[in-house]
Image 1 (cartoon, rainbow, N blue to C red):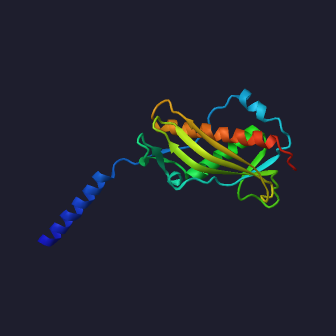
Image 2 (cartoon, helix red, strand yellow):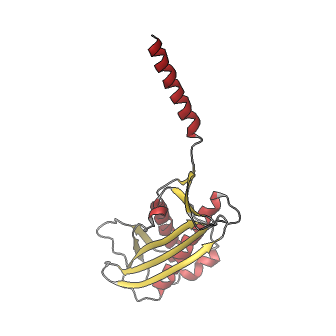
Image 3 (cartoon, helix red, strand yellow):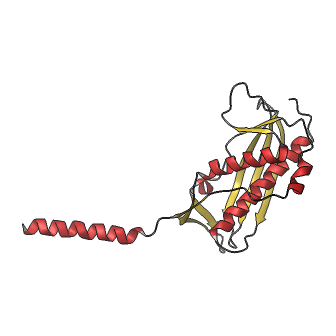
Length: 202
């Protein structure tokens, strides 16, 4: 009888410690498009030959492919924030937003892989991130390259390197996602401008 009481008390203590140590659930953040001035979009919508584009899921460094926000500290160390996380897989969220921004800036049909067999994009877009971090002031630091390929994926048309920092207005985690969204919009504009200069076969 005494042994049962001890076991019950021990179990209750373990449950209590787990409840106390768990803490509040993490905050989840969606990556949403930033508001874009219509006048700023118009110049990139001049190439009628960009009818259809295909994009693959973006490639991220291992630390950035984690749902936890990866931050660069002032002493140059990468830390993962378990209390603030992406609401989706980062690569999926970024790819979805990139497709949305390409549609807006190119006025084209844009599909993520895999697409239907009868879909024939004039070009394919692959974005490889070498760096994606929340910078100490709350914004985002991004670097990598955009690969532009022919519609059948067999020919590399151009490589567009990118590297920039969007500084946040404060250290609120929402500023990081706003900065990432701004960066993705810039990547879409870079892509469309480069494609407009090419002789693409539809």
